[in-house]
Image 1 (spheres, helix red, strand yellow):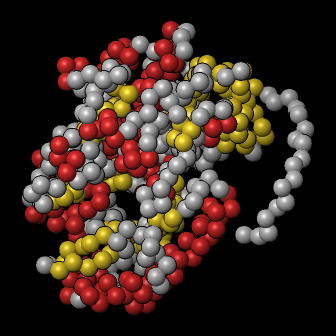
Image 2: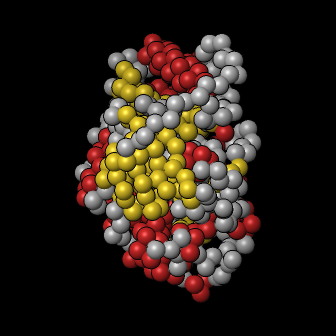
Image 3: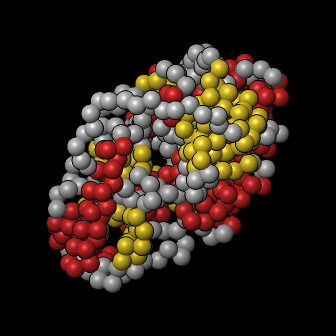
Length: 486
């Protein structure tokens, strides 16, 4: 944004920091992984403190307006992700705050169901094309109301007895040798400290494990989903029926107008998703919000290539530039696209949508080989449905995640429960989304409570006991007889 500062340094004065809590488990970051970690640890009997830098929980699922919880079942309709993730969905459904396909539709290719999601432009979240027969299959996924989700996450955390601190930015881990003993954090109340027996990094960006000195891999090839920042906005009061009628009657004209609306600024970065209009296809920039009572709302969600998603100058530039592009795109559509005449921008995401970043080097690194070998680890703590690898998805329906992928190599007292889990970029690109972080968080929180109770290191937690506890929490895990791996 301005001239780059010279490479000079200044010595920060030392001072005594008040310790405001001493707890069993400290969770840093209140996104999906952090919420699941905190709730699971507290329900398992641990004293828990949760620090979150924003004034709400949910991370990308709420503040980022990335409110899709996808890939909960495989292409055959077999559910792989449940536990706290399913509990959240059930709570939202009870308040009419989510949209999910009926269970009988999971894995179906029924045209009526498929067309509903195609017409709304949600093929990426709710549909997958079967690599063998070419048919669309309905995938069990959820679209959530982010405002209701914020409240439900608050209530779940408080009901579990978690000590919650919002508006609190984890600044630096408190280290004793190679052991994480707590966290300094900043807030409007000044710099404070929390001491803990186990710390869980759920920052998403690896803020804790990187500062603690853990090895990590930040390699991300350009062009992968995880090489982008995202910025979402909601456009309200759109006459959806009028827009759809125009799109169906004049698909070429509709596509032409959308191309002009972006001025080519999104052309290299936005996923151009095909929408079926009769027997024709046209490119669409917008998702039609299908959450109950969200009538007349469209979502615009460009992905912007980024070299470093934690570089404050690049983040600032993308935030400023993209918000302008969103407003310009809406303004063009309001003036030229039927149905947008009385529309208005209801909300742009309060936080940038980060998609990738640092991945810790753990006791085990998940790789493509684990998928193709159908490995079921002795310490499997999650099963991720595989829907995005083409023909591989037909042959290898699920990916098992071992507990060791959450345990940083060479660092004690720390677990990782976010997209920074130990994985190659291939694995991370496919399985670092909201439901996957919820799974990792539930496992990390349960394991942290076990380590505190047994007075043992997190890496020494008994796998079989951990798996039994997770199954008691409605986590879907494979039977040991299905395979072994180390």
